[in-house]
Length: 131
Image (cartoon, rainbow, N blue to C red; front, top):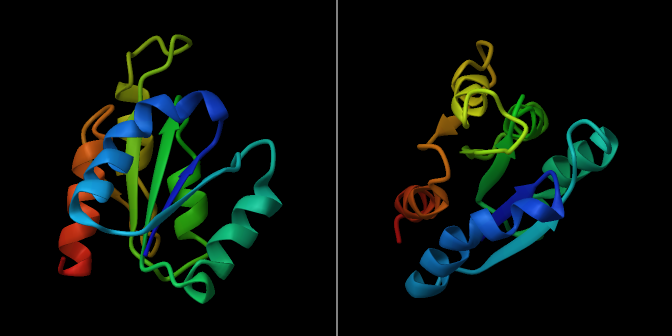
């Protein structure tokens, strides 16, 4: 019911809170790695086909420029929740990712949770699902 997407395998560990929270609530999810910058066509395909795979909410973890949640939201009408992630490359300790996710253009809505708050993203997904 929930799709969890990150741009790099190295982001998996920071998303563990979402996996744990969804497991605790008995909510099914899938996890995938696709980069908005390195594999944009794969990201678009994932978003366009999400509903057909039975997904109802998408959670996207992203750091730095954090383009993934917005790229996904541009290709689906499902709710998208962005999780800004800290990065050792960030000069702003995750604030850059938070601002990128929160500042979507009109017509491309993305919900944002706190930096490294994957657990909250899963809790919000559960509320959206009515679970």
